Image (cartoon, rainbow, N blue to C red):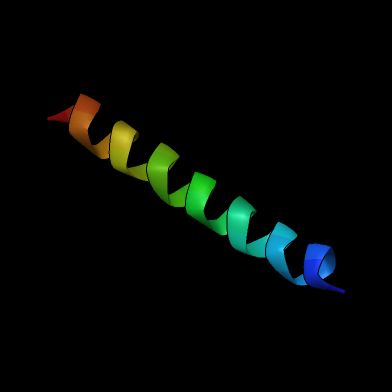
Length: 27
């Protein structure tokens, strides 16, 4: 159960990091 709950959280955090990198690169 913990893994099932943690997986989407990790995916969301990775998505945020990727978005931040894209924004930083565009600048």
